[in-house]
Image 1 (cartoon, rainbow, N blue to C red):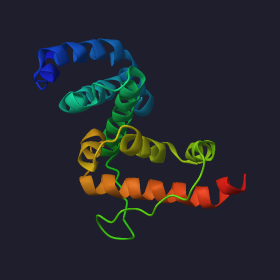
Image 2 (spheres, rainbow, N blue to C red):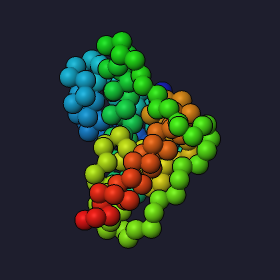
Image 3 (cartoon, rainbow, N blue to C red):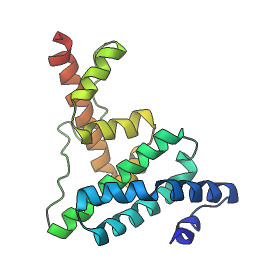
Image 4 (spheres, one colour):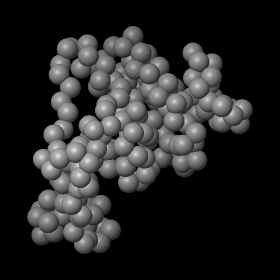
Length: 178
């Protein structure tokens, strides 16, 4: 299966780097997929899809520090696993509605110091923290986030907007008072 992923990568040095990452993180990915799915066969499917998605965007993300690349991969595995679980249980995928309309930039965050911002980010849910991490820490555009998470570009835009809105509310309220 590794050769199928590597066929998506153009340069030989990147293929070697991907192979190294694959060998170093396959067990971690399987563990995370199994945590969500509770089924080895489904976890293998999720892991395969996660590596496929990573290979498609490896050119852009291979320069990340190893711990950030690993975090990015774990997020992909988690989201692919959740999508597979939803598909399997025929649950509807909820897309986030944007109250301001498509393409509108979210409101700016209030001024705050780094410690306050970190504290408020820590109060957000996993999904909100992950989407903000992908957008602002890894600086992925909406299309890349959508591909990584297996959602539409509009859904990625909505999720970023709503995560920023929740963060803004925390900064203005709960965290600002601490």
